[in-house]
Picture 1 (cartoon, rainbow, N blue to C red):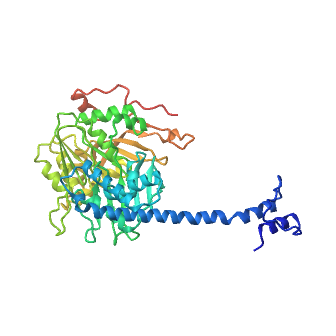
Picture 2 (picture 1 turned 135 degrees about the horizontal axis):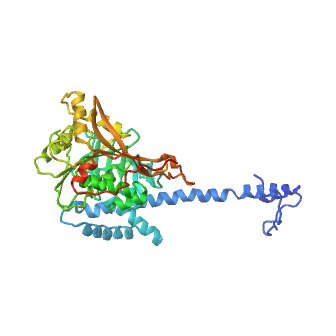
Picture 3 (picture 1 turned 180 degrees about the vertical axis):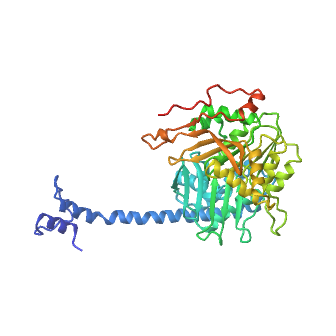
Length: 482
């Protein structure tokens, strides 16, 4: 390869004057383009060499981290599972032993690198490893792990890839097992799927090989440590102040309400807000697959279903809990989500004096919610005629609140629909509020519309007024056409 001097001379049109290694060559102020190309080409190997050094440094830190974690497990041993140690004592023990391990390594680390190493190893031992900083980030609402190398998050309603990864499939499996064992559940090849929760109530779903072909899959739906209140949903644009007044009146008036929506639309968050309207004197029983609801009242009984044990016995389903709750003198029954035969038991409870019950269902519109409830009742195996099922639904359900996640990432109530009754073989519905899509979008693509009244006065108003609950006079007046 020719020297840099030869190429510089060639770029000037000749090679008559070879470069002197001990004399610096002056660089013209306005160099031709081919001279710039020659200089750039000659200088290219230096950044490449630096780029080759960085992975070596990263590999060294990863190796140091793995050795520190292994040494920490050896030093602490079974004390990690000591029930006599409080959470604060356990963290203090790990911090003390980890400092000793890092000192023993005698690695040339800066203060920042040392603290980062300690934090990451502590997260591996006590927390959720690389996911811990995502859990601690209040702007992250959902975490999706598609194998050890692919981690995605949802922020402001938008999905994106997170700058974290697991060192191996084994590390990811350890994190999953740590989550599920804390609440007495298990995950293995005989039971490769599990629903669980974190200590703060965040929902967790995990699937491991052989079902998850690309590696263990983990999904965490985070819940706010400070539960959202009705003022927060109004600020987010999920609902309007008038709609909040209407929903409060419906809950206080003991209407049976179904919150409908797709995955990630905020059904559980809205159910939390609706349940906050329940009077303090009512006895509330909540029934869930994994406890998520964050009710603020005092008189609450929280029930959670249980999967079968390793012998295939001991399963307690949502349906079992709904049936049992009727013997517990409930004023309100709140079912986190109906997804099977328990729908029939819930409808029967709504029809037998347990007014004011709340639940959620997966569907894309109020009409679809009725159809899905019909299908779920059929899953109970009672072989009821379709008309009898529809009559049960029309008699039990008073209101359907539809949620959607719009293209801009926001979660909005798009319909408040009253279940009126039956006409022939059809359950009749009427929309009280509908989202105004015609308002368009702003410069950032955010929808400007809000739910507006359709002009229909719901039939349940008489029931609410009989209980002494007053609503503003113009609440149901239609919005003038644009």
